[in-house]
Length: 361
Length: 263
Image 1 (cartoon, rainbow over the protein chains, first blue to last red):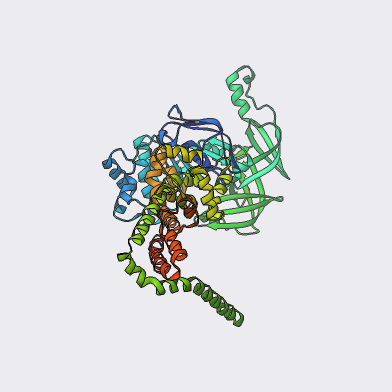
Image 2: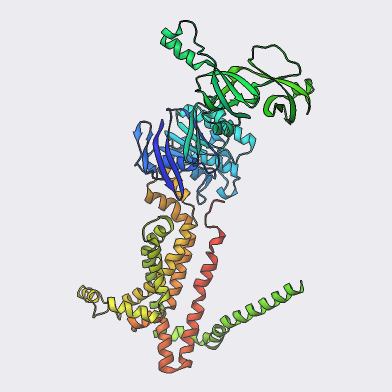
């Protein structure tokens, strides 16, 4: 388990500010954030390489805030591997391994065993990274910290390495915290995602929750939400079922699903939620928007007619930007659907999405 | 294009003149006294013992400088601390003051008239006028060179190697011994060679602190003032030839041949 509470540290002019999150024991956490957000500083503070000036670090229930790195039972793998160049590959893997046979087995699992006879200086960036992973796992750490460990790998090796790391993490029961700038990686690997920016945690939780319910417009945009609209929220009645006023649980449920309208320019978007009235942002994922050439009756509460402004095809997926009264809505659909609908710039289409597809923040 | 060619020719000419200025005196010295000097190595016992004394005291000074200077160089390269700039400046001071002045300063601290000198004499340790005085003078003037080069050698090793070793279970000292020291070794040896060479060539501080027994530089000066140029020439020539040894060693230890950086 990794529990970080109110952690603050300073490196030069950069500050890590009041960082708190938890990765439960045996789970896989991913810290995401833009370049310079403090991801590596956070890992090094957890590892004890950087001393925090406030807050605490708990690893597997032990308070290790003041403990040196060697007493934390953790491993760290940096983006640039940091293999010891004066040692052989085998000696690197076995550097601190409790059992030499275990080190060899780990090297085989991550694909580093065939590299044993080669000098460290002759390894490619990807090969170095495999050896660094083997070296870290060979110690049987209780916590493993990975700083963009797959970034130097080619796509095939990256998939293999990810699979091996995930499997070893499960088998050995190691709690992993990985840094990545790629939210897809967080979705693929992570049980817990932590979004860091300018040294502060913007949001943490299951990757799907971050994806579906970003806490701020910035989080939504960082995670790749195509439609983030600024507007005004107004409640449409209480939305409570009959008699709900007297029943607490039902009332709470109803409050979380009260009908709302969100106005942006000429558009009125219907949604449900517990958002308060006033200025807010609506986040609508592009894949939640359905396009049709004719207005068609569906259960979706939001239907808008507009004109296609732009079409961008990337392989099997096509992003279509529809201009609706000066507001741009981006829809994502398969390229085949786009071809079947004969979508092109200037064509009039209808965009539909459910009230539940709108997230207010 | 023509201007560029002219500039190249002028630069080459100036460079050649400068090189000639550096090489000509030593070349003349070796040509003039080299043969006689090598022959004197077999016949002149004073020259032999002087060279032996120089080599031994310079080696001991180098060992003392490395033992005392390595931790200091590491601290300066790796750890931020209050007054670091002042410490670095103080360490460079012996390089800037005239070496006879350094000798006088050492004499004030370690001479027979000083409290420390008297205490050491009382303990049976004579500094001024003994090989210990030679070693002290050599350390004083050449250790700053070692510390400066060793500091650079440590700075060239990315501290993250040590961090990785620490997370792999090594306490600070073991991580230094197993990782940082081997990675900086080439630079440290080169620094030690520079220090040794500087110690061998030292004259000003030594002549104040310990005229006798004579190291090679003092002997060549003594022969020159006592017997003239002809007598001093073979000794000076042998010293110049022997100076080639650390130079060749330095070339072999060039840090750019791989200081163990992960690139």
